[in-house]
Image (cartoon, rainbow, N blue to C red; front, side, top):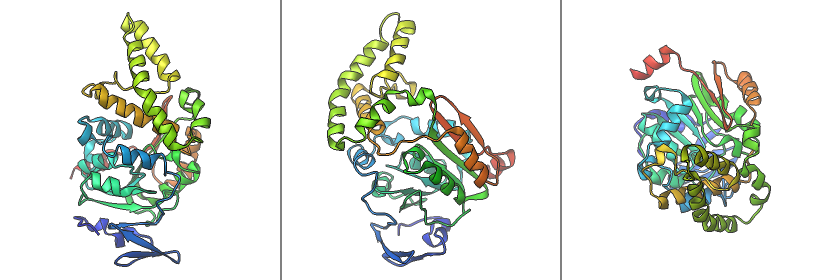
Length: 336
């Protein structure tokens, strides 16, 4: 395996008692599974992520990394959504459920965490993007069926993933069982609200998620530059602070494109980079096989049943956040 600095990241200390680790394979539930490219593979490359998420990682492998796009978007989003101070992450053992191409992994490592990054497929791309970091281990596994020790991690972190699993209720109940009794959790879900469910994404998904994924991607790639220029022109309609803003707001809900031109953290990017972002995120919205947000009530019910520590729900029109609220003692310990 890769050279690691922390013994907590050794596979032997992470895995459940029914996992046997050999030099180039793993024995789990009477199945021999490979360790390839120094990554243990508990799942096949063929999965429900093939065609959409894997396509995006292959075509835009570094797009979302702060270090690549020269923004602080991911770092800002993580700190804002968790509500935790940067010092809270330091030296914490973090289970990242759904690492994708590694944009959040990069931030967690930069904040000083020790990360176990998991995804159902394509984890090689994340490790390569981050130059095989010493404070992370990458595991190919399903977040519905994790092979780790229960109640073992300081933080369970699941961002922009839950709604894309086949059974979000089961997934949430499962991943929460891996946090220590005094540990912290952060789970993000799209909100199950009228505001969210009436957006263009959910109006189009009954058709687009059944399309051939290559055809869908090519069509999005073709129409995005035109829709980008169209929605930018709407925003600049005078008077911009009244009519322009109103037209752009309406377009945000009715025109199938993710246009970030007027979001402050992306102000340094040129049109070409923003169009690439728009292609990526529009395809990401329309292509996944699964996209079923949990209600805030359901998330709270599951957390009540599983967690032994306190938590809070942060609700908005677009997202729901389940998160621990660190007390002063935790923050002091994190800074030591």
